[in-house]
Picture 1 (cartoon, helix red, strand yellow):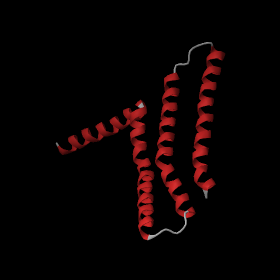
Picture 2 (tube, rainbow, N blue to C red):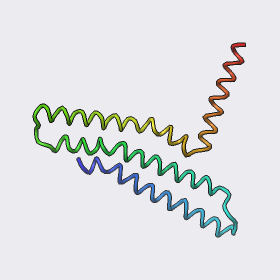
Picture 3 (tube, rainbow, N blue to C red):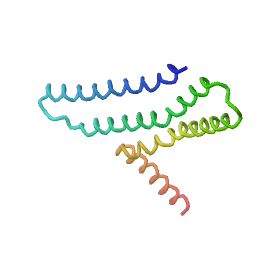
Picture 4 (cartoon, helix red, strand yellow):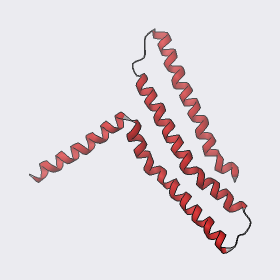
Length: 135
C-alpha cells in the first residue's frame, strides 16, 4: 500500500528532473552547434516553471490523501470518536486532492503568458460576438 501511494510522487519527481535536464542539455547543444544564442530560452524557462509549479501543487495537494489512506488501513480499530476524526481528515484530504484540478488553471494563468493570451482571446471574442448578436 505504501509503495502504491508513493509511486506517483517518485515518478513525477524523477520525470521532472529528466525533463529539465533534457531541456537544458538541448539548449546548450543547440547554442554550441549553431554558435548563437537560442531565441526561445524564455519559452524553455516558462515551461520549466510551469512544470515545477504543477508538480509542487500535485505533491502538496495529493500527499495528504496518500498518507491518510495508508494510516487508515494501518491503524488498529479505533473508538467512534477517533474514527470520526480520521474520517474527517480523510474527507479534507480528498477535498485537497480535488482542489488540485482547480489550481491547475490558476497555475497555467500565473506561469504561462501564451495560455493567458489564448484565454483572453477566447473570452474577448465570445463577449464581442454576444454583443453583436444582441444588436
